[in-house]
Length: 84
Image (cartoon, rainbow, N blue to C red):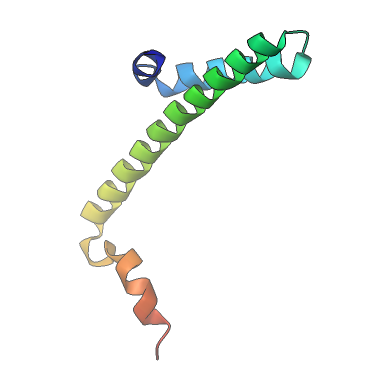
């Protein structure tokens, strides 16, 4: 299964390969089968990048919540700030 290999990629590796895949698709000159394989690989790489970015966001949110514990629950309080 290739997704296990993709999940072991670092963010920069996945991003760079994704950029290469997009360039190759934009240039064209590939068969339909090759284009589909490139597109599938691009989707896989985009998923890896998303997972890395979501993980980074969670880590940043956790770090910020530790620094400012009184503001750590902003998401839950958003609904109550509209009522006055």
